[in-house]
Length: 396
Image (tube, rainbow, N blue to C red; front, top):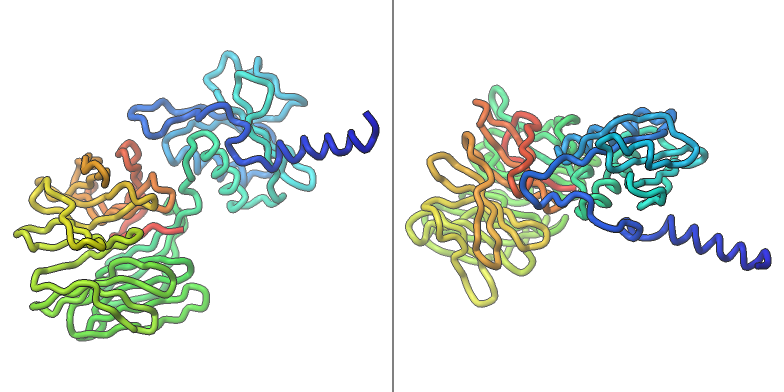
């Protein structure tokens, strides 16, 4: 083989191993997180010299999900030898070498060939750790990771309510400085926080730009305003009720509104999913969840006497909601079949919000005697307390 052909062959091999999609080298999904009662997958870290922040983030992220047990980092050997791990419970080894970049190879302990190869920027920080742990999570579960999620939420202060931001696991909480007498809902879209609040004697819908710390009032009314959902960074859906008429409306950030529905019932908690609008109404006697489609309004929930606070997953296939069954509990409904499953059972559990990864949700729970925000999986297997507060909204 001449030198030109050798160079082309090497270039092809590098392209195949480095630029292939995440799962291209994997033979299987190593952990099916949709199955109940799964055993934690044991992972060992090797190398990561002078990358203590990166390895710490990887370990904390993966173990926080409760799907993994992470050992190390251990010193790296010249070549990967699966025989060294034969007597341990380790099934996956993540090896990292550093030169001008962080070169990561992932091995199953059943083979000397890697199932994943990728390079990352040589930066010893949390962001790089999030990048690597996200790729590990997706490779091993086939699912998007929650590690780049954020959530916005509300805390009750001495004389008012405040709006706060946090990273995905509640370890980095930031105070936005926003204060209002009553806040009925808060949403996060990109670098903008949308919220509805009682401001003096009027209800308002406002938007706060996180980047430049500016706040803008969009809508002001004596009628009750409850923000529903954000369609994009310039449009949102909300409900307005004056005690006689309830309307669901769409508005842009300039306050130009269009009514979608109007009734003499109490219609609220409007949520947007593709071409459908989900909302809560008492038109059949007790609060139930409905949806507006091109063919009209249809009832969605039939089990239970009090169903509220819908949240639709990004795929549009599942709906989380809160149902009163003694206490409020979180249910997950398969939208196509109508099958629903209860995933909480202790205390009151309310205000569900699907995260962008589609598997985890943020909720408010008082199971420990105070209002706290929890991160829970859609099958109920993972339930982790994050911080104190309520009205969580998960975004990215």
